[in-house]
Length: 337
Image (cartoon, rainbow, N blue to C red; front, top):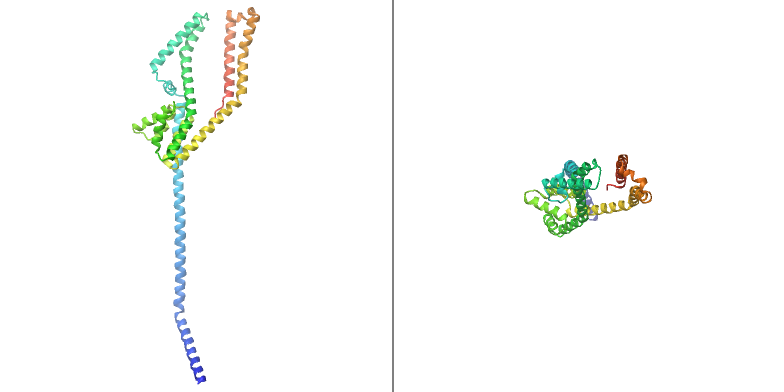
Protein backbone atom coordinates (compact mmCIF):
# COMPACT_ATOMS: atom_id res chain seq x y z
CA UNK A 1 0.00 0.00 0.00
CA UNK A 2 2.81 2.35 0.90
CA UNK A 3 4.70 1.37 -2.26
CA UNK A 4 1.63 1.99 -4.44
CA UNK A 5 0.99 5.32 -2.89
CA UNK A 6 4.59 6.34 -3.46
CA UNK A 7 4.46 5.25 -7.08
CA UNK A 8 1.22 7.14 -7.66
CA UNK A 9 2.61 10.28 -6.01
CA UNK A 10 5.81 10.06 -8.04
CA UNK A 11 3.76 9.60 -11.21
CA UNK A 12 1.60 12.59 -10.33
CA UNK A 13 4.66 14.74 -9.56
CA UNK A 14 6.33 13.69 -12.78
CA UNK A 15 3.18 14.44 -14.72
CA UNK A 16 2.95 17.91 -13.11
CA UNK A 17 6.59 18.67 -13.88
CA UNK A 18 6.11 17.48 -17.45
CA UNK A 19 2.98 19.60 -17.84
CA UNK A 20 4.81 22.63 -16.40
CA UNK A 21 7.74 22.07 -18.72
CA UNK A 22 5.42 21.76 -21.72
CA UNK A 23 3.51 24.92 -20.63
CA UNK A 24 6.76 26.85 -20.10
CA UNK A 25 8.02 25.72 -23.50
CA UNK A 26 4.81 26.86 -25.13
CA UNK A 27 4.60 30.18 -23.19
CA UNK A 28 8.32 31.05 -23.31
CA UNK A 29 8.13 33.13 -26.47
CA UNK A 30 5.07 35.00 -25.22
CA UNK A 31 6.67 35.73 -21.82
CA UNK A 32 9.87 36.85 -23.53
CA UNK A 33 7.91 39.12 -25.90
CA UNK A 34 6.00 40.62 -22.96
CA UNK A 35 9.27 41.33 -21.14
CA UNK A 36 10.67 42.97 -24.25
CA UNK A 37 7.46 44.99 -24.63
CA UNK A 38 7.67 46.18 -21.00
CA UNK A 39 11.34 47.12 -21.45
CA UNK A 40 10.49 48.95 -24.66
CA UNK A 41 7.59 50.80 -22.99
CA UNK A 42 9.84 51.74 -20.09
CA UNK A 43 12.47 53.01 -22.52
CA UNK A 44 9.85 55.04 -24.40
CA UNK A 45 8.50 56.51 -21.14
CA UNK A 46 12.03 57.38 -20.03
CA UNK A 47 12.74 58.97 -23.41
CA UNK A 48 9.49 60.96 -23.25
CA UNK A 49 10.38 62.13 -19.74
CA UNK A 50 13.85 63.13 -20.91
CA UNK A 51 12.37 64.95 -23.89
CA UNK A 52 9.91 66.79 -21.67
CA UNK A 53 12.74 67.79 -19.30
CA UNK A 54 14.87 68.91 -22.24
CA UNK A 55 11.93 70.81 -23.74
CA UNK A 56 11.18 72.49 -20.40
CA UNK A 57 14.85 73.41 -19.99
CA UNK A 58 14.95 74.73 -23.56
CA UNK A 59 11.76 76.73 -22.98
CA UNK A 60 13.18 78.24 -19.78
CA UNK A 61 16.43 79.09 -21.54
CA UNK A 62 14.52 80.64 -24.45
CA UNK A 63 12.35 82.63 -22.04
CA UNK A 64 15.42 83.83 -20.14
CA UNK A 65 17.16 84.75 -23.41
CA UNK A 66 14.04 86.55 -24.62
CA UNK A 67 13.77 88.48 -21.35
CA UNK A 68 17.49 89.26 -21.39
CA UNK A 69 17.20 90.51 -24.97
CA UNK A 70 14.20 92.62 -24.00
CA UNK A 71 16.16 94.16 -21.13
CA UNK A 72 19.17 94.76 -23.41
CA UNK A 73 16.98 96.41 -26.03
CA UNK A 74 15.36 98.55 -23.34
CA UNK A 75 18.74 99.56 -21.96
CA UNK A 76 20.01 100.39 -25.44
CA UNK A 77 16.93 102.46 -26.18
CA UNK A 78 17.21 104.22 -22.83
CA UNK A 79 20.91 104.82 -23.43
CA UNK A 80 20.19 106.46 -26.79
CA UNK A 81 17.48 108.60 -25.25
CA UNK A 82 19.78 109.48 -22.35
CA UNK A 83 22.54 110.53 -24.74
CA UNK A 84 20.19 112.86 -26.56
CA UNK A 85 19.03 114.26 -23.23
CA UNK A 86 22.63 114.63 -22.01
CA UNK A 87 23.36 116.88 -24.96
CA UNK A 88 20.55 119.13 -23.78
CA UNK A 89 21.64 118.85 -20.15
CA UNK A 90 25.31 119.65 -20.79
CA UNK A 91 24.75 122.48 -23.24
CA UNK A 92 21.15 123.58 -22.81
CA UNK A 93 19.77 126.72 -24.43
CA UNK A 94 19.39 129.81 -22.29
CA UNK A 95 15.64 129.32 -22.04
CA UNK A 96 16.13 125.80 -20.69
CA UNK A 97 18.78 127.02 -18.23
CA UNK A 98 16.35 129.61 -16.86
CA UNK A 99 13.74 126.90 -16.42
CA UNK A 100 16.25 124.58 -14.75
CA UNK A 101 17.17 127.40 -12.36
CA UNK A 102 13.57 127.54 -11.21
CA UNK A 103 13.05 131.07 -12.53
CA UNK A 104 9.78 132.11 -14.12
CA UNK A 105 11.11 135.17 -15.95
CA UNK A 106 10.43 135.32 -19.69
CA UNK A 107 13.16 135.68 -22.29
CA UNK A 108 12.10 139.24 -23.11
CA UNK A 109 12.37 140.32 -19.50
CA UNK A 110 15.69 138.50 -19.11
CA UNK A 111 17.21 140.35 -22.07
CA UNK A 112 15.81 143.61 -20.72
CA UNK A 113 17.36 142.98 -17.31
CA UNK A 114 20.65 142.05 -19.00
CA UNK A 115 20.75 145.35 -20.92
CA UNK A 116 19.93 147.32 -17.76
CA UNK A 117 22.66 145.47 -15.83
CA UNK A 118 25.21 146.18 -18.58
CA UNK A 119 24.33 149.88 -18.75
CA UNK A 120 24.51 150.25 -14.96
CA UNK A 121 27.88 148.48 -14.76
CA UNK A 122 29.28 150.56 -17.63
CA UNK A 123 28.05 153.78 -15.97
CA UNK A 124 29.66 152.78 -12.69
CA UNK A 125 32.94 152.03 -14.46
CA UNK A 126 32.83 155.39 -16.28
CA UNK A 127 31.99 157.34 -13.13
CA UNK A 128 34.68 155.46 -11.22
CA UNK A 129 37.37 156.82 -13.53
CA UNK A 130 38.04 153.64 -15.50
CA UNK A 131 39.81 153.95 -18.86
CA UNK A 132 37.68 154.52 -21.93
CA UNK A 133 38.46 151.08 -23.37
CA UNK A 134 37.27 149.45 -20.13
CA UNK A 135 33.74 150.91 -20.38
CA UNK A 136 32.65 148.68 -23.34
CA UNK A 137 34.19 145.72 -21.52
CA UNK A 138 32.11 146.54 -18.43
CA UNK A 139 29.03 146.84 -20.67
CA UNK A 140 29.63 143.37 -22.15
CA UNK A 141 30.33 141.85 -18.74
CA UNK A 142 27.19 143.39 -17.29
CA UNK A 143 24.96 142.46 -20.26
CA UNK A 144 26.29 138.98 -21.09
CA UNK A 145 28.34 137.77 -18.13
CA UNK A 146 26.61 138.64 -14.88
CA UNK A 147 23.03 137.62 -15.81
CA UNK A 148 24.16 134.25 -17.16
CA UNK A 149 26.40 133.73 -14.15
CA UNK A 150 23.41 134.43 -11.91
CA UNK A 151 21.31 131.89 -13.82
CA UNK A 152 24.11 129.32 -13.54
CA UNK A 153 24.45 130.03 -9.82
CA UNK A 154 20.71 129.59 -9.23
CA UNK A 155 20.76 126.42 -11.36
CA UNK A 156 23.61 124.85 -9.37
CA UNK A 157 22.04 125.77 -6.03
CA UNK A 158 18.72 124.25 -7.09
CA UNK A 159 20.40 121.00 -8.19
CA UNK A 160 22.24 120.82 -4.85
CA UNK A 161 18.99 121.29 -2.91
CA UNK A 162 17.34 118.59 -5.06
CA UNK A 163 20.13 116.09 -4.35
CA UNK A 164 19.89 116.70 -0.61
CA UNK A 165 16.17 115.88 -0.52
CA UNK A 166 15.84 113.32 -3.34
CA UNK A 167 17.02 110.19 -1.38
CA UNK A 168 14.48 110.97 1.37
CA UNK A 169 11.73 111.19 -1.25
CA UNK A 170 12.76 107.81 -2.66
CA UNK A 171 12.64 106.28 0.82
CA UNK A 172 9.09 107.57 1.24
CA UNK A 173 8.07 106.02 -2.10
CA UNK A 174 9.68 102.71 -1.06
CA UNK A 175 7.72 102.66 2.20
CA UNK A 176 4.51 103.51 0.35
CA UNK A 177 5.02 100.69 -2.17
CA UNK A 178 5.87 98.19 0.57
CA UNK A 179 2.71 99.15 2.44
CA UNK A 180 0.62 98.27 -0.62
CA UNK A 181 0.10 101.67 -2.24
CA UNK A 182 0.61 101.99 -6.01
CA UNK A 183 3.53 103.98 -7.37
CA UNK A 184 1.21 106.72 -8.55
CA UNK A 185 0.04 107.42 -5.00
CA UNK A 186 3.63 107.52 -3.73
CA UNK A 187 4.54 110.10 -6.39
CA UNK A 188 1.47 112.19 -5.49
CA UNK A 189 2.49 112.04 -1.85
CA UNK A 190 5.94 113.46 -2.70
CA UNK A 191 4.36 116.08 -4.96
CA UNK A 192 2.24 117.31 -2.05
CA UNK A 193 4.46 116.88 1.01
CA UNK A 194 8.14 117.02 -0.02
CA UNK A 195 10.42 120.04 0.15
CA UNK A 196 11.38 122.18 -2.81
CA UNK A 197 12.60 121.61 -5.49
CA UNK A 198 11.72 117.88 -5.25
CA UNK A 199 8.08 118.84 -4.75
CA UNK A 200 8.01 120.82 -8.00
CA UNK A 201 9.72 118.09 -10.02
CA UNK A 202 7.30 115.39 -8.86
CA UNK A 203 4.42 117.78 -9.40
CA UNK A 204 5.51 117.94 -13.05
CA UNK A 205 5.30 114.12 -13.21
CA UNK A 206 1.75 114.23 -11.83
CA UNK A 207 0.78 116.96 -14.31
CA UNK A 208 2.29 114.95 -17.18
CA UNK A 209 0.17 111.93 -16.15
CA UNK A 210 -2.94 114.06 -16.28
CA UNK A 211 -2.26 114.93 -19.93
CA UNK A 212 -1.82 111.28 -20.92
CA UNK A 213 1.85 110.39 -20.33
CA UNK A 214 2.81 107.25 -18.42
CA UNK A 215 4.86 107.39 -15.22
CA UNK A 216 8.09 106.10 -16.90
CA UNK A 217 7.83 108.67 -19.73
CA UNK A 218 7.15 111.48 -17.26
CA UNK A 219 10.03 110.34 -15.04
CA UNK A 220 12.42 110.22 -18.00
CA UNK A 221 11.58 113.88 -18.69
CA UNK A 222 12.77 114.96 -15.26
CA UNK A 223 16.30 115.55 -16.57
CA UNK A 224 14.95 118.33 -18.80
CA UNK A 225 14.24 120.48 -15.75
CA UNK A 226 16.71 118.93 -13.28
CA UNK A 227 20.15 118.60 -14.94
CA UNK A 228 21.75 115.91 -12.81
CA UNK A 229 22.48 112.18 -13.36
CA UNK A 230 20.47 111.20 -10.29
CA UNK A 231 17.22 112.33 -11.91
CA UNK A 232 18.10 110.23 -14.96
CA UNK A 233 18.75 107.20 -12.71
CA UNK A 234 15.23 107.48 -11.31
CA UNK A 235 13.66 107.55 -14.78
CA UNK A 236 15.74 104.57 -15.95
CA UNK A 237 14.80 102.47 -12.91
CA UNK A 238 11.08 103.16 -13.41
CA UNK A 239 11.34 102.43 -17.16
CA UNK A 240 13.18 99.12 -16.72
CA UNK A 241 10.85 97.99 -13.93
CA UNK A 242 7.83 98.60 -16.13
CA UNK A 243 9.25 96.71 -19.11
CA UNK A 244 11.11 93.86 -17.38
CA UNK A 245 9.19 93.57 -14.12
CA UNK A 246 10.71 92.97 -10.71
CA UNK A 247 10.48 94.30 -7.19
CA UNK A 248 9.97 98.05 -7.47
CA UNK A 249 10.53 98.76 -3.78
CA UNK A 250 13.85 96.90 -3.86
CA UNK A 251 14.97 98.74 -7.01
CA UNK A 252 14.09 102.16 -5.59
CA UNK A 253 15.70 101.22 -2.26
CA UNK A 254 18.92 100.31 -4.07
CA UNK A 255 18.75 103.60 -5.98
CA UNK A 256 18.32 105.54 -2.73
CA UNK A 257 21.32 103.75 -1.24
CA UNK A 258 23.41 104.47 -4.34
CA UNK A 259 22.49 108.18 -4.21
CA UNK A 260 23.46 108.39 -0.54
CA UNK A 261 26.76 106.64 -1.30
CA UNK A 262 27.42 109.12 -4.12
CA UNK A 263 26.72 111.98 -1.73
CA UNK A 264 29.13 110.53 0.82
CA UNK A 265 31.78 110.08 -1.87
CA UNK A 266 31.36 113.70 -3.00
CA UNK A 267 31.73 114.90 0.59
CA UNK A 268 34.84 112.74 1.01
CA UNK A 269 36.37 114.10 -2.21
CA UNK A 270 35.58 117.64 -1.13
CA UNK A 271 37.23 117.04 2.25
CA UNK A 272 40.33 115.55 0.63
CA UNK A 273 40.61 118.50 -1.78
CA UNK A 274 40.29 121.19 0.89
CA UNK A 275 44.06 121.43 1.27
CA UNK A 276 44.47 122.07 -2.45
CA UNK A 277 41.65 124.62 -2.35
CA UNK A 278 43.23 126.44 0.58
CA UNK A 279 46.55 126.52 -1.27
CA UNK A 280 44.81 127.86 -4.38
CA UNK A 281 43.10 130.60 -2.37
CA UNK A 282 46.40 131.63 -0.77
CA UNK A 283 48.25 131.62 -4.10
CA UNK A 284 45.45 133.54 -5.81
CA UNK A 285 45.27 136.19 -3.09
CA UNK A 286 49.06 136.72 -2.78
CA UNK A 287 49.35 139.21 -5.70
CA UNK A 288 46.61 141.42 -4.27
CA UNK A 289 48.02 141.26 -0.74
CA UNK A 290 51.54 142.06 -1.95
CA UNK A 291 50.25 144.94 -4.11
CA UNK A 292 48.33 146.36 -1.16
CA UNK A 293 51.36 146.10 1.16
CA UNK A 294 53.60 147.70 -1.47
CA UNK A 295 51.05 150.50 -1.85
CA UNK A 296 51.11 151.08 1.91
CA UNK A 297 54.92 151.13 2.10
CA UNK A 298 55.85 152.73 -1.25
CA UNK A 299 52.83 154.22 -3.06
CA UNK A 300 54.96 156.05 -5.64
CA UNK A 301 56.53 152.75 -6.66
CA UNK A 302 53.24 150.99 -7.57
CA UNK A 303 51.06 153.88 -8.73
CA UNK A 304 52.39 153.86 -12.34
CA UNK A 305 50.51 150.57 -12.79
CA UNK A 306 47.25 152.50 -12.34
CA UNK A 307 48.13 155.83 -13.92
CA UNK A 308 50.00 154.95 -17.11
CA UNK A 309 48.92 153.10 -20.26
CA UNK A 310 51.81 150.64 -20.00
CA UNK A 311 50.79 149.93 -16.40
CA UNK A 312 47.22 149.28 -17.56
CA UNK A 313 48.52 146.84 -20.15
CA UNK A 314 50.57 145.04 -17.52
CA UNK A 315 47.54 144.79 -15.26
CA UNK A 316 45.44 143.44 -18.13
CA UNK A 317 47.99 140.74 -18.98
CA UNK A 318 48.35 139.93 -15.28
CA UNK A 319 44.58 139.56 -14.94
CA UNK A 320 44.48 137.22 -17.95
CA UNK A 321 47.27 135.01 -16.60
CA UNK A 322 45.76 135.02 -13.14
CA UNK A 323 42.41 133.97 -14.60
CA UNK A 324 44.04 131.12 -16.53
CA UNK A 325 45.85 129.94 -13.41
CA UNK A 326 42.70 130.06 -11.30
CA UNK A 327 40.77 128.19 -14.01
CA UNK A 328 43.42 125.45 -14.20
CA UNK A 329 43.55 125.06 -10.42
CA UNK A 330 39.76 124.88 -10.28
CA UNK A 331 39.73 122.13 -12.91
CA UNK A 332 42.39 120.19 -10.98
CA UNK A 333 40.44 120.41 -7.72
CA UNK A 334 36.98 119.56 -9.00
CA UNK A 335 36.20 115.84 -9.45
CA UNK A 336 33.11 114.32 -10.99
CA UNK A 337 31.69 111.50 -8.89
